[in-house]
Image 1: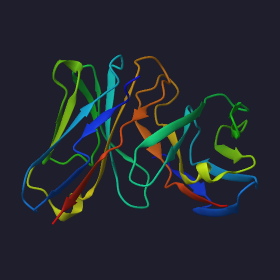
Image 2 (image 1 turned 90 degrees about the horizontal axis):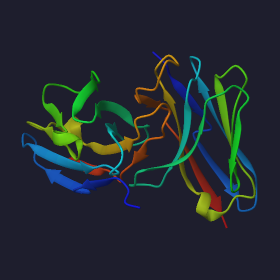
Image 3 (image 1 turned 135 degrees about the vertical axis):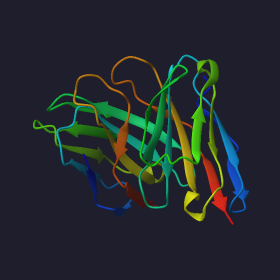
Image 4 (image 1 turned 120 degrees about the vertical axis):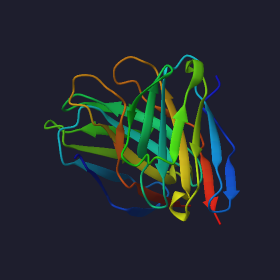
Length: 115
Length: 114
């Protein structure tokens, strides 16, 4: 079965610093989703990547999927306290033939931003 | 724009009791998913509906769990004879029916078993 490993497990950065979170899959990724979660709340969709080498940005957050489609990274530029939370990567487990939506998730990376 | 709504937000019950959670998806979404999340873990898939049809169930969904989505609108998740291990956050998500549509999550129902 497919597994997603996220690193680091937790991260504390000073406001204004850049940071990167990684997500590595044991199998090829056909749809990779990044979500943010605040404690006790639901997941907020950030971005979805499909193609090898794909890169997407929204505000100060950039997500990339490597050419081999087994690793993704999430990069935050000039972090702010509002970026604090748990970042989760999720992957579609279907074999690229069409999404059934059964997502598996990593354990998450907890980000704290110190003012 | 109304997001995914889940009720109740919190449920505390005694072991052995039955509980039912409700999820109202985004109105135009025909796919609905249930996940369970425990502390320090990512969400784990439980089951998935396309319209009113339950198309997939995880091995995590024991016989004590049942989910319905009558008329393809809201969904309910019932847990019978609750056990301590059922304590978790139960998350509902919905998405459109085309390929690779992102799932949008509700705020979850936190279940605590005494």
